[in-house]
Structures are given as structure tokens and as C-alpha cells.
Length: 198
Image 1 (cartoon, rainbow, N blue to C red):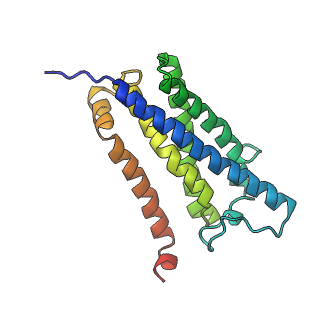
Image 2 (cartoon, one colour; image 1 turned 180 degrees about the vertical axis):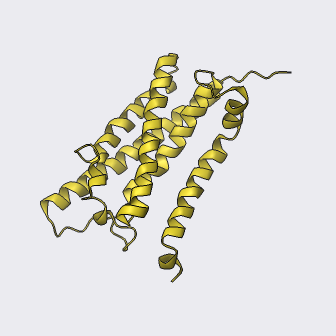
């Protein structure tokens, strides 16, 4: 017997919590990055509070071209994006039934955020050669937001990758989140294995 996938109110509640809490954490990290950027621009000798060691060092990342991909600091995008995410979460908490176009718009936004995270991970590991702890907080928040919104859209059939694949992705949502973290952690470990193991 075929089982129809539907998003139950409980799932929307879970989504609302993930969007609001994740959005607040993302905004806090983005604002902290903006503060550190302003401090570095004001005083070249300023040491950011997230300079922990040669690898975990905001100061090595904050003034790179990659940190201002569109001509302004990336955290500005974070503030805008996470504010939007919080708004969606607040609407879900209020019980508002969002139209398909809004769900798809949100999915497009979080997909863009996920692509940016993937690009920044690659740049941090293999071009810049350092990790920004506050940026990593943003990465860590973007991943569950992306998978939650995407699987919600698949479950409600607002989005489809074919019935079989859609059902698999919805079922494995938290495994996909955990796998995303593990892949990034493994890449970081391998990239600087000499440093971690010395």
C-alpha cells in the first residue's frame, strides 16, 4: 500500500524551532563577524577574539577577497538571510499556512546559502589555509536549515526529485545533516592532520 508523505503540524513546529533558533544563532555570529571586521579595519594591530591558533584564526580570513565575495563583507548577507529565516519560522509558529511559492523561495535561498558554505569551506581549507570559528558557526547552522526546508518541501510535494529519491531524502534527513558535518570535519582533519596530531 502506498504511503502518502505529508507534513504534519509537528513537523512544521520542528521547522519553526530550527528556523528561529538557527536564525538567531546565525545572526549573532554574523554580527560578531561584522564587529571584528570593523575593529580590524579601524586598527591593523587588532587581534580578533576568534584568533585561537594558526589554524582557527578569523584574522587570517577576515581581510581576504573571499570574505567579501560581492564587494561587501559576507556577514551582511548572513544578517539579511538569517533575518528572513527567522521571519519564516515566526510565521510557522503563528500557524500561518505558507503558499508553495514562499516555501520554494525559502528553499532557493537556503540552497544558495548551502552553495556559499560549500564554496567557503573549500576556500578556507585549500586557498586561505585557515578557519574562521565564527564562520564555522554559520556553516553549522546553515546545514540543518537547508536539509529541514528541503525535506519539508519534498514531503509536501512542493518539490520533487522523483517519488523514490524524495522519500529516501525525507527519511534520512538527520543522517544527511550528520553526514554533512562529518564530511566537513573529515576534510578539516585531513587538511591539517599534522597540526592536530603533533
